Amino acid sequence: MFQRTVRVLENISLAERTYRVRLACPELAAAIRPGQFVMLRLPRTTDPLLGRPFALYDTVLDNGQPVAIDVVYLVVGKMTAHLADMGPGESLEVWGPLGKPFLDVGHPPRVTLVAGGIGQTPFLAYARELLGTRGYGGDAPRVRTRSVALYYGVRTARFAAGIDDFRAAGVEVHLASDDGSLGSPGYVTQLLESHGKTGPLVGCGPEPMLQALAKLAARWGVPCQVSLETPMACGIGICFSCVTKVRTGEGWDYKRVCVDGPCFDAQEWMFDEPQPAGHV
Ligand SMILES: Cc1cc2nc3c(=O)[nH]c(=O)nc-3n(C[C@H](O)[C@H](O)[C@H](O)COP(=O)(O)OP(=O)(O)OC[C@H]3O[C@@H](n4cnc5c(N)ncnc54)[C@H](O)[C@@H]3O)c2cc1C
Ligand code: FES
Image (tube, rainbow, N blue to C red):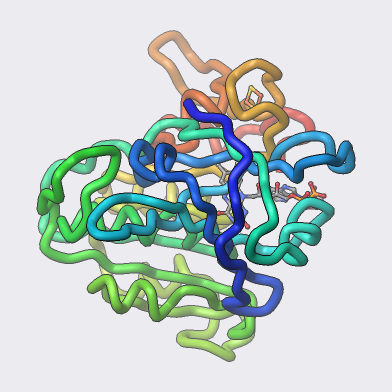
């Protein structure tokens, strides 16, 4: 794991309250894999004191070498509001890669990614890895599937971010919005269900969406993993602020999303049980 103070190369608006920040960090960019995340912290301040977790959106190459990482973020509170004000040349503290990469899906003909809210962010690099157009973590590109579909649901069209990036990466994009202003009206899981059984499924987004997805996967009998966005304090397994309930051979156990996840098998994740207090 690397911990560095790094330079912001750019910080651009993608959609309402949604930005992409590019950070110069070649060692981290060379090591990180899709599904993993980084902690970002504002330097020279104690407000907020703690870092915040963000998924890898993608790595940036220069002459084939990884030189930077992109993070796409939605402004929801203190840290992200400060981040949105930062410009090129300013610095941020970053540590990572953290967590585990996406679980192995084997070599299916098609992989279906399901995102809600800001949950599309871990999927761009993952789609490129699955399609074999990019390698990560020092691996050469390797084709794992012929086709990747993204089902992406937003509250309203103004929040949709990165759709062109996914299309440019060769991903088939299906859109839904709560208010009908983009794609199909209604929830993204309803759109997915209306298109018929497919698998394997990989989800990231608000927990109610992930619960609906896990139930659909169970009904269809297809493999499904979910990437959780549980609030975190340390990101490295020390504080236990990020636990979630997961089934084990003996019953169930608390797992730390930061080190045991953030990706879990949907049928092991106990979405239908009350989660620990403070869990969003
Ligand atoms: C593994 C992982 C990857 C993530 N990747 C991304 C990403 O790529 N892009 C992105 O925009 N966000 C991502 N998040 C969520 C991101 O960490 C939070 O939005 C961020 O911590 C908010 O910090 P803040 O200081 O701006 O808000 P705070 O001031 O900490 O919080 C403001 C409000 O948002 C709520 N809140 C904070 N964190 C969350 C959360 N995780 N879920 C729901 N509500 C929350 C708080 O309860 C509060 O009401 C990820 C989270 C995890 C665990
Ligand atoms: S965030 Fe501290 S243990 Fe997971």
